[in-house]
Amino acid sequence: MKYLVMSDSHGDRDIVQKIYDQFKGHVDVFLHCGDSELPAEDPLWESIVVVQGNCDYDTGYKKEQLVRTKNDRIYLTHGHLYQVNFTMTPLELRAKEEKATIALLGHTHKIGCEYIDGTLYVNPGSISQPRGLPYKSFAIIDSNDDTFDVSYYDRSAQKIPDFTFSFKKKVNN
Image 1 (cartoon, rainbow, N blue to C red):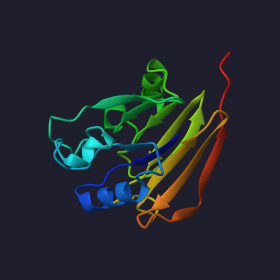
Image 2: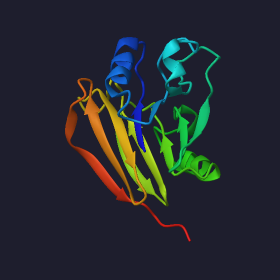
Image 3: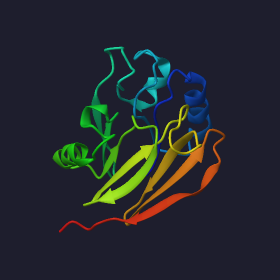
Image 4: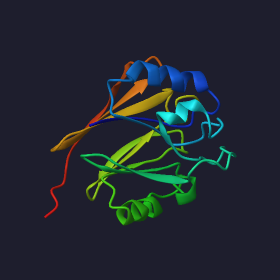
């Protein structure tokens, strides 16, 4: 299964549409971690799983979502409700509670990827307003039986050098 993850587009509807159009048919699930600043009824969200960020004032958004696929349980949130600027602990506890194999977050506008106790945590960075690194980015997660492979891309859909990660999945007994 392939998952395309983006976040923090902050009103740039065109880039979200462009990325969706470019990867439609090449990935299985599209996810947006919030701060789109678009209406919750925008037709884009018919094909993209989205959550509410701290800059999304439309009350039609969900604060979190759990997406089940044949390979994974994906927990999706923006991150601001879990203090992700300071610690990952509250988010880790929530992901465990949901039995998530993947937890996705945004909010920090920073690329982040780690595998902790059987759960893959991915922050795709910001597709419009990055912090810390100069890359306006999104991520693609390739989940198979044995590994998670995560690659980061820039706005022109080019892989970002040195931002590809692979994690061997923990076997649960």
